[in-house]
Length: 177
Image 1: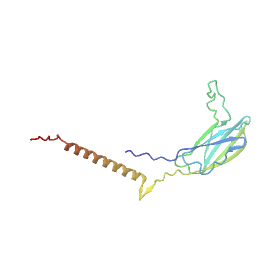
Image 2 (image 1 turned 60 degrees about the vertical axis):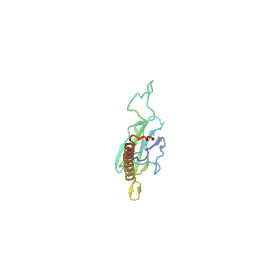
Image 3 (image 1 turned 90 degrees about the horizontal axis):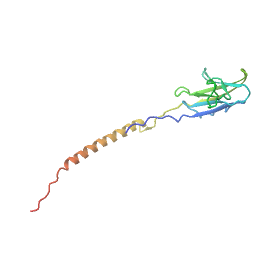
Image 4 (image 1 turned 180 degrees about the vertical axis):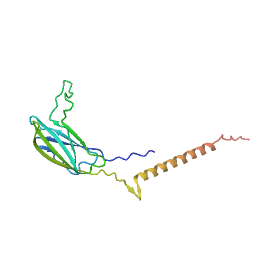
């Protein structure tokens, strides 16, 4: 009899591999991502001494990744030796305000010198939580009225059981003459 929470879409993660030819795919297909979804940018360029910085931009606001490496040195336990070393940049599109066109710039450096720039983009869809309307009432209003009706029926049933039990007092036995 409790209301179920309103749930948006299931959050998605889209992977972009950045190799020696740039982002693959550079342009994430329209309709793929909505607000709240994520894009993971993986550095997979095997060029010697290559590093990558990913810039994500919308309406003049920019976010830059840390410097990404192809691989990070690990110790005998499989733990990274340098905590600053990373090969993936995770970008989460804000749940409420990220709808619109986002541009990516992939800046590839070799020996700390910018050697190549490539670009890509994605159009993030608004995550609408449209309510279903039936006969002028929203789905939430219908759910509340169903719960109210169920509660009323339960209370009436309890009273009916109490009345029936109170009327079933001790039975009079008939004596034969």
